[in-house]
Image (tube, rainbow, N blue to C red; front, side, top):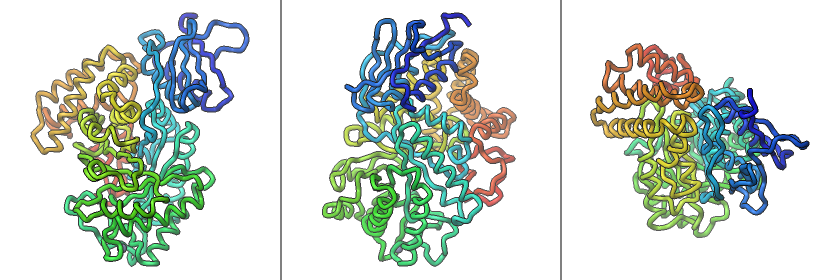
Length: 551
Ligand SMILES: [Zn+2]
């Protein structure tokens, strides 16, 4: 390899593990994209550094600055994590066609949102539940480069009988693995709890089913009534055991969920959101603080007042006299943002988060046809709340909506950066800048198809064919590193599958089946499963089997 392709980096403060990690990530991502060799400059005289990685005390901790120092580009963070965010911006704005061209972007960037979370719904044997550690680690690095600072997972109680279930230990290992990977990257670790625990919970403790006219509150029959002393003790003891299993590794945030699933409609719990739920969440806060003294609590209001039960107003009344146990309020819905916090104000005058559903809208099974970009949808929803929220936790069922993650994380970072500006940066970085226009056109067609599917309107066959032609053209022009990247594969396969199902002979053609087999591989799906929910996250391949039925 000739000297021209050597990229020398001077790493200041490299005794900090996260600074050396930022260098390792920079090196890996550059070397993946072009035949450059990235080397750390030694202390002795050598070639002048082209890149300097540094910590700058005059920046706020999460901010970064990219500037010119002589012939070198200096990427500086206000802390090691700020440096990681700066490396993300640097990598995305550098170019790689054959040779490495360092980013021309210069400036200082400070995040506007303070809690830029991502919720990995790690259940149903989806990608988060099944992927090997190396893939999860790399994926978390990738979204850290986009500005995430908190990772939330769910403990898959819904898939387990009790702590003696043969899969329980594996679930604990998974939760601890996420915590460790997050902390190694300087990210906060968060878990959600509520009154829905093991599916093996004693039947006599079960909650009274809720009124649920829109069928959006979720109910597998597992929730427990916390107003009975035995039910309360069951919830407290099992959450305590979960905390115990995370005690040494640490938990930074806990989210209390009212519904979807959860809740109880007995007369002692109703209205759940401003009565039974609040009492239980306050008790769980005490329990959590016993294990994790610095933990912050987030109270979710998901599906409050559907139907109207006065839950929002009841929460405002309750927090007007007793706010000490809640740090933040989370709100959102499957569609438009709830009006109450926007029109009346946030209960307790607390900071407000959103919870955009980036996974399920307009596709079934979730991710079953490949990539699912929805930039127009998330721009519209963001415009409703961008001046009032201080961040949020997008709900994610897998890696197929990776583009939505980037879009929302950048909204949190810089509220006026449009979804399409983010996607341009994404496409240039992941696929190369010369295909930006075509890929944006493909995304537009795929989003329209998802919208028609949501509204149960007939598909547009001509547009599906056009998306496929564009994708096939891009596929032929991509450099090998981009064509082999799963991010491109899932977008390409979505174009193939939309063409087969909307303009061809359906999902049982050889082309469609081959596309689904490849998606199943990428998602680590089970072709035969005992998980009654796995079909929700598995491409609908005809020969795939769900032994425990579908619900
Ligand atoms: Zn109850």
